Every structure is written in C-alpha cells, then in structure tokens.
Amino acid sequence: MSENIKVVMAKLGLDIHWRGAVALTRMLRDQGMEVVYLGNQFPESIVRSAVQEGADVVGLSTLGGNHLTLGPKVVEMLKEQGLDDVLILMGGVIPPEDIPKLKEAGIAEVFGPESKIETITDFIRNNVA
Image (tube, rainbow, N blue to C red; front, side):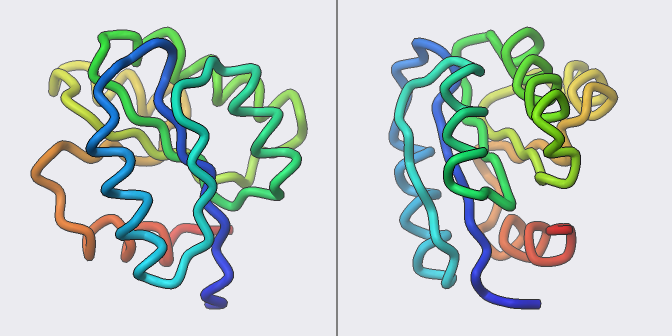
C-alpha cells in the first residue's frame, strides 16, 4: 500500500474541542500520511474539501453531541458525489450505544480518546480502497 494516503480531518459543526483532532493530524503526518486539517466545518464544506483534495479518508472529530446527525450527513453527501470508496472515520467521546448506529450509517470505525495511533493508522492502511 502506498504511503500517499490523503486524509481530510475536520471538527464537526461548532464543536470547540480541538486538541484531539490537531494532535491526531500531527500524528498521522508523522506516520507518513498527507493530512489537511479543516478545523470546524459543517458537512457541505467537509465534502467539498474531500472532493477538491482527492481524499482517501475523511476523519470527523466530535465531542459536541452532533455525531448522529452530522456524521451520517457527511456519509450521505460523499455518496452523492460518487465517493463511496472514501474511508470515513469518527473520533471523540461518543456514547457506546451510538457506535452501531454510526457504523450502520456508513462510518467505518469510531475511535475514542484512548485509541492508540498505531491502531488508527493500521486501520487506515488496511481499509483505504
């Protein structure tokens, strides 16, 4: 697998908790991936950036409780753009009972705050189309 994996990383909506997303952005770059960090964005901007950047992965970070509405909206809009093969990941503090709903909606994996960078990068490398 080529190391030229392109990740678009964004905070969902108006969530003000940015440290985890910024730290993960740096760690993924250290692992050889190209990462574009968008900061706070809504689904339309995230999808537009994923299209423009030719993203292999879209990483969504949330702690604001909007994961069940905005996360699936990103999935839906990527599919509308013909980007069914983009790997969509979510991270943050997400109630365990919501994880199956997110996966059902098309989020490939959900990583919590204690996730190891190796676990995340291995998942990405093993699942990028």
